[in-house]
Image (tube, rainbow, N blue to C red; front, side, top):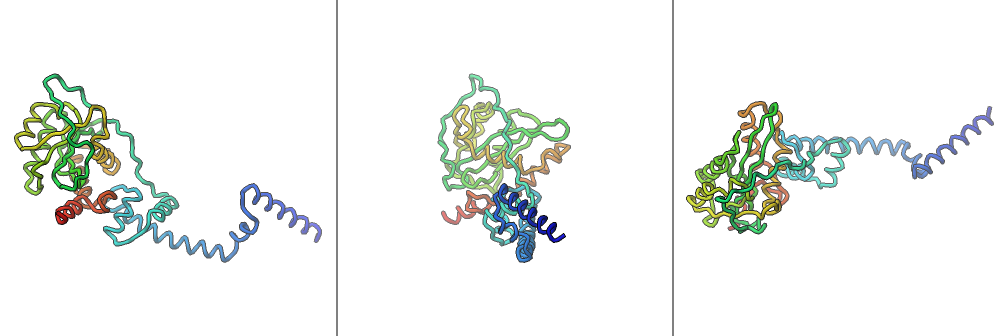
Length: 297
């Protein structure tokens, strides 16, 4: 019987040695993993990680909007006065399967080519988006939104390139020209928005923006105009980026009616402008960064 025990023990050690070898683990590491000290250490670390997870989830769920690691870091600092580095946040998110929204490819196709009476203007911006002057460089574009059962709406926005703030937006069930002109009217009629004396609207070469009617509306308000080069999305990249974040973080598909969609967009715009910190804005929200630029002037 003693001999049998010795043989079994020898075979077990040989098996463990073999498994450790093919796994790239030392035998001492294997035995240490199952030691009482090691188990207690893992239990303590798991308790600490759960506390981190709970804080991260508070930021992740803040205002009911999906967030990635950077947004979580900034929200923790801005709203909860908690400072974690990105490496720690990403580790906890991976460990507890807290999924970041993944940017989807934008299926938005450019509108039909401008007719002869439409006029393309030059690119005044040349990608100099950050001029640190609120209300000067105003980016605009239109995207489509699918909601309900096969329903479609269109969203026109105007974004301040210096602060990333959405200054004006207009939701419509139609791509008629007034989706763009009404967005301009809303911008200029809002007394809470300060427009720089040298302000200009920058867009792509879509038919709305090359239209003489649209261009005359800009002239009536004393606004300049600039356009991206044909087929070059990078010339209006911050506006495209906003639409990407918006579609990732909003709850468009759960809206069944146009009224529900409008309400969701209204709520998202408040969240984006006032509560959504941004890495490129010194980790401030667009509204805070706008105030920061005004105070620094």
